[in-house]
Length: 564
Image (cartoon, rainbow, N blue to C red; front, side, top):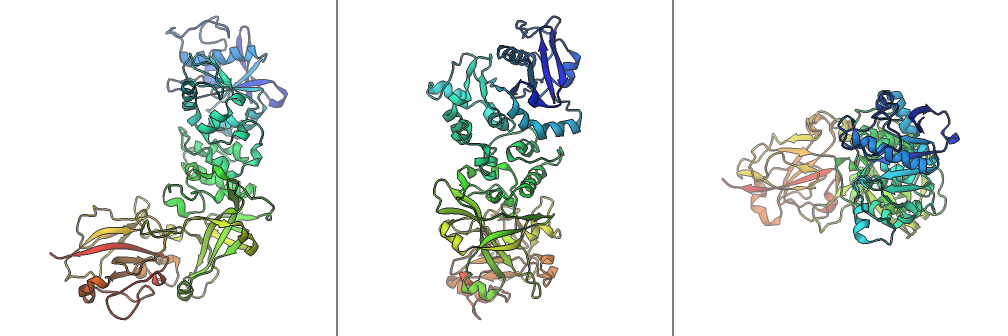
């Protein structure tokens, strides 16, 4: 660690072996586009940007010979405050780290949370809060509290740990006007950050909050580099890992894997909370795509009592763990079809708010891979509904705490990603999967026009829905599991067998096309072909497909026959 050591004649960087031996302040600020004071700048200007400059030097904003004038002014403000507080040392992230050294940068970011904890105080510089803003408290005028709470500082990723880690945080406005101390602004800050007020006040320790809660505080915050969404959470989550700028979203995947390896907090799987908007197709995976997926998890608290320790083994495709599981009964039709072998709730040791009777659980099921292989891994269930009036099955479920009575310990393997992701034969350049209808199209009913798709958020046509297709292409965005409860479906149905994932199905059987008409269109039933299988019910037309006859690995596209 390096610290800025100021003197009356200037300042110098000093290497520090053990920061706990020093009394230092730390600056928290938002970087400006017009440049910040870097490590190289301190070496080039050891006595400040102009001759005779000291920490008490006057304003030099207008001096054209001063490079990065606004950044130097900010530095002067912070050093003056350090001296007022009786300190000789200051840490500033922009200049106390040599960012040209990737090894030093990685070590510093992994240590940064501790450095903020050890600081005597943190100076949070909110450059966009007006200089005439008065001293604030939770009882202050709404106008000034609004200006404070809407500062960009509260929306940046790195400032999250800079708000939570220090013993005390002092806030300053654009002209270094004192805005107040965090302990006097707890409610205001809690409202604009969704961070619990008792953590901000120091009444609760960070350890009182589970991983999902901590990551949820990052939701909505921005970073310049996408990798920093993960790196700025290292200290808050208590993990260490090397930095690999350029890896993109993989950084957040690695972060979650490190959390899984280092503790048994199951809340890391509690993302995409019930009622929260789905982020993207990754919601069918075990790991979240970004911190935004944890939106709404700030109210998920650890369940009361001890439910046993959990052990995990993680590899490139799956996670094996010994967990508490609660069996879910299959209905008669599912049991008869045999494609779903088991379905479970996995309680994630989270409860909603103060209602300890409502437990958050992950819904998983084990599908049959082949006739001779019964030990297939478990898939996370997320069944969209084809209608707002029909129930779906969310990735997360809220179950009654009494389900613990039916729980049992079991070692299971969870796939990190759905199986279709492993089959690249149908993958498009955009990462989705393409299926083309190239056979058995009816020729005597005219052109088929796509009028709707189920589920709407994971199946789409690459061309406008109003365009008639003679050989339509359908793009599957992910292997979502769909729940059917309609008595009849009009349209074109795909049954995805995942190609090579199931050893007993070849490439030609990747999908089966079934044209179905309801009882009101029986005049077309004889002209529409159908394929035998578990989705067909009855021997003649019209073909009615009930909820009990629909496989959970299906998608439905509603087509309207159009006569030319």
